[in-house]
Structure formats: C-alpha cells, structure tokens
Amino acid sequence: MSESSPVSLVALLHGPDKPGLVARTAGWIFGRGGNILHADQHRDADANIFFQRIEWVPAGDDLAKEADLFTKIARDELGMEVRVARSDAKPKIAVFVSKIDHCFHDLLLRWKAGEMPCTVALVISNHPDMEAACANYGVPFHFIPVTKENKAQAEAEEVALCRAAGVELVVMARYMQILSDWFIANIGCPVINIHHSFLPAFAGARPYEQAYKRGVKLIGATAHYATAKLDEGPIIQQAVAAVNHRHSVADLQRKGRDLEKSVLAQAVRWHLENRILTFANKTVVFD
Image: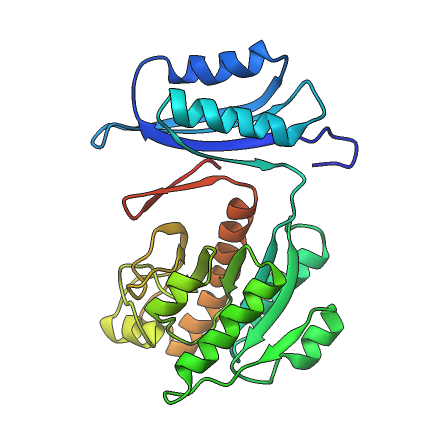
C-alpha cells in the first residue's frame, strides 16, 4: 500500500455455505457507501464451508466502528467466523532463531527493505550467535539457553517476553527446538515454522540426510503453522527443487536454503496481509 492509498479494511470469514453470502457481504458494503477493492471466495464442497476474503475502503473515517459492524453482521446474521484488520496495520512479530542464520537474515533484510508489513519487536535465540547481527538491525536480542532440564523455565521466559512486547506472530526462522504443548497453548498468537523438507515427507530431524539416503529426485521446504503435533500443522506454502544421484547432502542443503528463505518469506507475508484462513488442519490462501 502506497502512502497516498486510502486505508482499507480486510475481512476474512468462513462458515457453513448457503445461498447469497457473496451478495450479502458486498451489498452491506455498497449500502454503506464503501468501495470494494478486492474480493475472493472459495467453497469446500466436501465440508460445505464457505471462505471469503474481502477488502474495501469505507465511506466514513471511523474504521473501528465499520469493522465492528461488519463483524456483527457476518457473525450474527450470516453465521460466519470473522476477523477484520486494517490494511495499514503493522503487527509486532518475534523471530526465533538458533545458529543457522539464512532465514533470519532474509526476513530481517526484507523487513528493513519495507517488504514485510510488520514490526520486528524482538529476536529470541537459544544461542548467543545472532546478538551482534541484531544490534546492526536495531532489534532487541534475547539469549535464552534451552536444555532438557530448564526447558519449561526457558519457554515461560519466552512467552513472558512475547506477551510483554505485544507480539502478534512468532516466526521460527530455523529455531531448532521443539515447542511444547504448553508453549503453543500459552503464546497467545500464531506461530509459523519453516521445515526443511516437503512435508509430510521427512518430518523431524535431519531431513536432508533422510532425503539423501532415500535417493529422492525432489527436495522441498514447507512453511506451516506450528501445533502441538510436530511438523503436522496447517501447511501455508511449499516449494521444491530437482536433485539427482550426483548431489551430496551438502548440495541438498545448499539448494534447500534457497527454498527455505523464499517459502518462509512468502508464508509470513501472506499471514501479515491477512490472506490465510485455516480449517480442519488445512489452509485456504487468497494469494
């Protein structure tokens, strides 16, 4: 959105499908003098669920009131689950990283270049390696060592830091720790993870080594929402690259790093632009 563009509202809604839903939402906006900029919808025929993303510029200046009124009609009259966001919002995010830094630097550089509509509120790591880089980026860095013995305490500290900073999204940029059920339940916001394989193949640790031993001809990267089940959350974005018998594990890792950066960046951007709806451990992405 350019500086001269009017601030719009973006609504994501889903619920049981029935006739007239598109007409009702569009008609309500038109009836209040609004101008629809984008509208897209999808119907899951098997589940009979309707999904919609609609963006509009309201006629008045009170966007909070407009959002509340739209939420009420979508929820109470149409039976939809709905959330509405402003197009100029810049949610606060926390980046979690360990020692492998390519996704971390890619995200921070994209943010600095204005490609990510967010504010990087803090970086959390279980290693001290990224402290100097965070100083250069001007982002607070928190080193929280994690061991088997102190994991619960470390996660409690991570959650407290994120909540105190008002974090609305956690991005795991190759953070090599398994988040506990307690963390997922208490962090209070979505968590996006990048996994270095084409899930559901080669979940868990050392996927490139697993892929090499299996002799695959394609490797991939997967960005997904983290859930209590390891590497089984709703998939947001995936990409693949061709490999062959001449490629070593190091070659697979090199190719995979490029995939991981682009896949994670795209998933985070879609989330920040309010383009993703989740349902039944799947995602609908209005790209």
